[in-house]
Image (cartoon, chains in turn red, orange):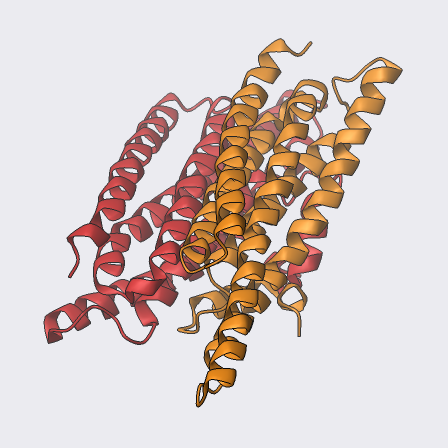
Length: 208
Length: 208
C-alpha cells in the first residue's frame, strides 16, 4: 500500500514507529507537497488582486504549476521510502565469493543513486514551486498572504531537509563524477531556494 | 470527517482546492506533527548511542514525549480548520439591530480567540518537541542524524508558520490584554525555538 493511500493519522503513526521508513526523506517530500498545495490554494481563491486578463492568466498558470508540483512531491513521499529499501536490500545480498560481492556492491550503489536522485528531485520540485510564490503573493487574494508565507516556510524546510538526505547518501557513493555533480546541484538548488523565498517575501509589498 | 482521517493524498488535494480550509494553520500543525514524529522514530531505533541505564531512560523519555506531542499536534490540524470556520460562522450572523450586532461581534471575537490559541498551541507543542531533540540527537542511533535534522527543519517551519497565523488573528482581536499576552508569548516561543534548534544541532558533536 502506498504511503499516500494511508490515512494521515496512520502515516504519522508510521513515521513515529521505530522503523527507518518512512523517515526524513519522505517527510521532506511531504513538507514540499503541502507547501506547493498552499500556493495552489491561494492561487485559486476568489477575489484575487489580479485584475487584468494578463495577471489573471499569470496567477492561473502559477496555480496550475503548483498543483502539478504538489502531486509530483506527493509521489516522492513513496519513492523516497522505496529507495531506502533498495539500499537495505542490497546490503542483505550474499557476499560469499568475489562474484557475489561485486553484484552486491553494484546493487547497493544503484540503490544509493536512486536514494540520492529522489531527494534531489524533491529539491528541484520545491525550488520550482518557490518560483511560483511571487506571482501568487502579488496577484492572489490579499487575505491569504499568511498561507503563502507558511507555504514558503514548508518549501524551505523541504529543500533543506532533502539536501541533508542527498548528502547522507552521497557520502557512500563511489562514482566520483555522479557524486560531484549531485553535490553541486544540491548547493545550487539551496541557493536558488533562498533567493526565491526572499523574492517572494518581498512580493506582496510590491503588489497592488 | 476529521482531516486526519483522510488519506494523505486526499488531505493534500483538500489543501490544494480553492477553499480556505485546510490552510496554513493546519499545514503548520502537520509540519510540527511530522517533525515530532521523526524525533520519536529516532528515539525508538535499535542500536542507540545511549549505553548507561540513565541514558537509555533519558532517550526513552524523550521518545515518549515526542509521541505525545506528535499526537497533540495532529489534533491541532483539525482544530485549526474548525477555529477558522467558527470565525466565518460569526461573520455570517445577522446584524439587523444592535442586539444582533453585539451578539455577532462577540461570536467573531470568540472565534478569533480560538483561532489564535490554536496556532499558539502548535507553537508550544513544537517548542516542547524541539527541547527533546538534543537528547535524541546525542543518544539515538548515529545513522539517523539526518532524520533528527529534518525533524528540526519541520518543527522550525511549524513554529514560524503558526506564528504567522497567531499574528493574522491578533490583528482583529479587540481584547487588548489578550492580544498583548498572546503576542508576547508568540515572540518568546519563537526565540525558544531558535535557541533550542541551535542547541540540538550542536548536540551530535558532543555525543559519544
